[in-house]
Image (cartoon, rainbow, N blue to C red; front, side):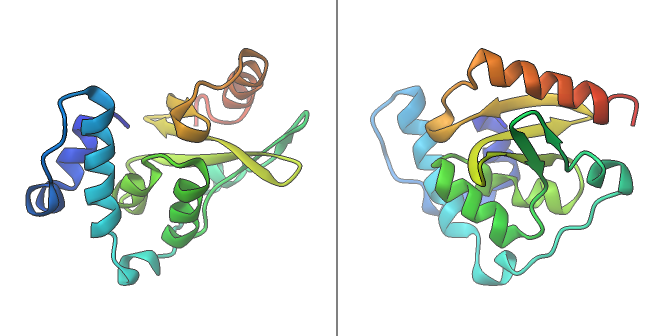
Length: 151
């Protein structure tokens, strides 16, 4: 999700906690992520997520990649910490079923997160928001086409 959506979904936290930073895209993004990180309370982290059957069936293995949905806000927050990105800001969107987040694993290690919005890949990134290598991105597109198109 882009920085503007993070602000929109967490406006109160950003307004209350935002600190001045040097003007650059990443400095601004990181400060907004910091605000969202502080806003997600322990109570919120106890949320359990529920998904339609169609989305659970996409939790599968394709080649050497395994695709999983987070069971809870706590798990999604742990993924955010592992990937050092803004997944924490998705808790509200996943809770309301506006966005799906799939973790992509290889040998039980989280490598990427894929955001699905309106049944399309909205974004896919690795640690520190790095792009997914083309070979793995090809597998992600294949997985998406096989399990999430025409849901």
